[in-house]
Each structure stands twice: as structure tokens, then as C-alpha cells.
Length: 429
Image (cartoon, rainbow, N blue to C red; front, side, top):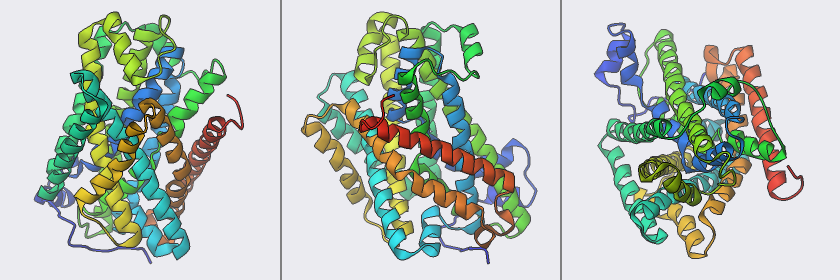
């Protein structure tokens, strides 16, 4: 029996019904259902990506662009599976876990996922605060206070309907994208070399392996997998199998479009860092150092654009991280806390890190390690549930899709293990 539920949370727009009834076709049919993939795409351009991509471009030029492309393809696959789960079952991934897994395992997954959500917010919250502090010459703690107020204000938009929040997040993603489009016109770009290396696998040395592992291992974010299924399960009320199939097709299209934009932004980050730093400043690794180095190299405008994109990324990704945390708690234990309380709790690690004097960029790296530890739980659960007829019915994965998902999951998880072993000194890359 396929899991399904109908909840009052579902708010189908009239335009959605027009699409499902066949009265709306083409691109206009996608627009009513667009939003979930745009929201989760923020996870792929958060401040953690900034630090990794800067290192990749500064040290190796265009050599690791292929890693970004591969990571993005894996992300598309898993986000489409997450969306499919929500559309078919009417449950989020966390709820499916609660309904199908032993209670002890459910509680373990809940705790690990909550910690991962907090680790995610650490990177995102600090990223926005660093950008504000550098742009306006403020103490980091003041930047964090401003970030807290702004992100909480953005979260309140969800109470006025999901469309307002989705449009706001989409606008912030647009700011990041336009910022890096502008950077490509400022930083020198070797288009011929770029075209030759983007699809050619190349790992120049052991340190390149470590950076590649960082790019891939942190690409499929645990909170994004939980969130996407929850966002899709409450958008429409398909009445027939054909309507559900139509929604899945539109969702897959949105995933491809939204994550293609996120992937292009990541490529632009690496290309900008390669053009600005490779050759002259290959050791640039910190966000603060990148900003300070950009000023004499490319001018104040390029450095300012870089910070504006970082702030937009930090604000939007911190909002999405908090939304995911709420959905994780609600799904696993059928319990939620006031939004202001969750926002306060998730900010505590960030303030503790700064007050303790821990380097902000180092904190970003440590947060990625926490995500690596949490990642196996949602990845394995997603592949398992979307491949089962008991959960998905006729919408379960085809054998080829399941095989691709299993291979991709094994590769990502293996790389996360390598990242952890390298971090703790067990192996040296």
C-alpha cells in the first residue's frame, strides 16, 4: 500500500489546477509549481561553497571545474528523488522514516539530523556575518547580530504564504548569480583553457584530491534532502495517477533548471578565483583573505560585489537551514518549537565559536565535517524508500535510476570517509 496523506497544509493554487486539468501548457505550466528546487538550490551556493571554490580556483586554476560539474549532477539526482518522495507519498523524508523505521533508529536519525542542521546554520550564519563585517567595517559580533535580525525577519514571511518567502529567496539567489556574472567581466578568464578542462578529469596532486573531496563531499546536503520532500508534499492535491506523474515531470524540470543555475554559480566562483588568484596568490584560502586580495588585484568594485554575493548567500541559506530544522523535528518526532526559539538555538554555536576566538573560516571547515558524518542517514534512506514498491507504488525508481543512485551514494559517502580520515590525520592527502 503506497503511503499517502492529505493534510490541511496543502494549499493548491488555482493555476496548479489549471495545469493538472491540461488547460495550461508549456513554460507557463512550470511556474505554479516552481519554488521548492529554487529554495533548496541555496544549499549549493552557501558560504561553505565560497571557501571551497576559492581554494580550488586559486590553487589549481580550472583543473577542478569537472569536479563541480560531477557534484552538481549527483545533486540533481538526489534532489529529484527527494521531491518525488514528497509528491508521491504526501510525506516528507523525515515522516517516511518515522512511519517505517524502528523507533530507536528514528531517534538517532533525528538527533544526528538536528546536529547537522545546526552545523549547516553555523556556516551559513557566519558567512553572512563575515560579509557584513568586511563590507561595512564592523566587528564580527555586530555583523552576526544584524544577520540574526534580517534572517528572522525573512523567516516571518513564511507565515504570509510560501510564495513570498520563495520569491524572496529566489531574489537573493539572483543577487548571487548576477554578482558572479559581473565578476566574470572583471576577472581575467582564459575561455579556451576553461573549455578544455571543464570536462577532463584531472587531479594534479594529493592536495587537489582533498579539495575535490571537499567539493563533492559537501555538495549533497542532509538538510536539503529532508527539506525538498517536505516542500513538495504540501503544494498540490493530485487526484489521479496521471496528475501525479505530471507534477513529477514538472518537478524534475525545475530541479534541472534550478540546480543548473546553482552549478553555473559554483563554476563562476572557481573561474573568478582562478582568474584573480591563480599564479600570483595561489595560497588564498580564507574568505577574508580573498576579499583583501581582490582590492589591489581587481579593484574595490570586484571586492564589493564579492561581499554582496556572500551576504545574499548567507542570508538566504541561513533561512533555508532554519526551515529545514523545523521540518526535521516535525517529521521525526511530530513536535515543533516557536520559530524565534529555533532561530535562537541555531545561532548559539555561531556566537560561541566567535566569542571563543575560533577562526571563522576554520569553523566553516569543521561544520562541513559534521555534515559529512550526518550525510549517510538521509542518502541511504532516500535511495531505499524511493526504490520500494510498498512506499512508492508504481512510482518507485526504475532499476537504472536505483543503480545510478546507489553508485552516486557510494562515491559521495566514500569521499566523505576520505575527508574525515584526512581531517583527523589517519590518512594524508
